[in-house]
Amino acid sequence: MSENKHRVSRRQFLNYTLTGVGGFMAAGMLMPMVRFAVDPVLQPKAAGEFVNTNVKESDIKEEPTRVDFTIKQKDAWHEAEEPKSAWVYKNEKGEIVALSPICKHLGCTVNWNGDKSNPNMFFCPCHGGLYEKNGDNVPGTPPSAPLDEYEYKIQDGFLYLGKAKPRGGA
Amino acid sequence: MKWQMVDIDSFLQSREYVDTAVVPLLSVSFDEELKRNASKADFIKIVSQELERQLKGRIMLLPPFVSLKNDDIDLDKLLKKWKDTIKQHFQHVIFLTCEERWRKEGDEFIWIPSIPIEHMDQDVKRKVVQDQIEQIMNILLQYWNRT
Image 1: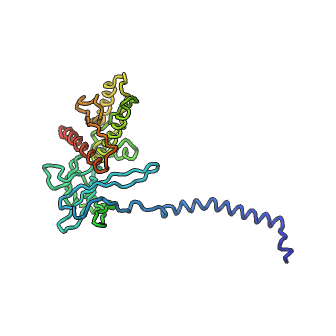
Image 2: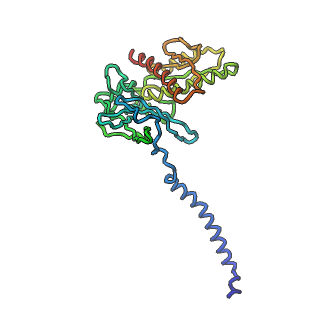
Image 3: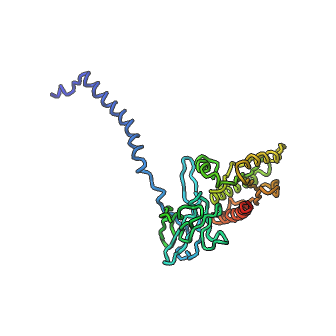
């Protein structure tokens, strides 16, 4: 038996080698494919992160104030700090509301009290879009949806903002 | 909107709303003004991009018009050609510049003082830029209200 053990026929030898080499080649092809397939799962989720705005919770008033912050954004070959803004205030119930200033019409930045003839409203300088304080669009002006609202959280007394989420239509 | 593919599609869809073209004017030289020119270019770039961000739906930010300092070609004629061409597609054309030579050159030129912001703190920088934006916006609103 022990003598036979060392006897490997030409056919067997070729079988082993080809299976071995073929196996390596198959693995070499399949591994990157599998890696590509699961890659999205392995990516760190940057979008869901909250960003510190350096605004103290106690400083937030009932009058909407503009809060500027930057998020890091990676785009193929360059990494940029994208400037973002939010209109932040406390509503009657004392809850914090952080509205995205991006007009739902064509993406301009809306301003609080931006138009003298429409006080206490968000005004879009581009085409005269109007929004109520709670972000609802005023019918008859170009925008067709209310302003997006940021997810927020309070940590160590500071306001952190997350993603802007669309609210239901008015 | 910017002069880039992602914006062009939405531009084509909503052309009637985008009635203002903004062209930054820059000049290039390698003499003692080199540093100043680079700093101006920085400032104009930041201001024009921020302006575009805030007025995305109504302005189209075109690539900058670059000229050599002390060039002997007839710049005014060339610029006029730009203006006339753009005017066929946009109701308003704005040339945004820090260059003294285009200061008070006409209605469509908006001259802003170049502020060396490269050594400023983030918050101060943002405030300086926002101040400029608000002034430019006021001028733009005047143009828009006129028509």
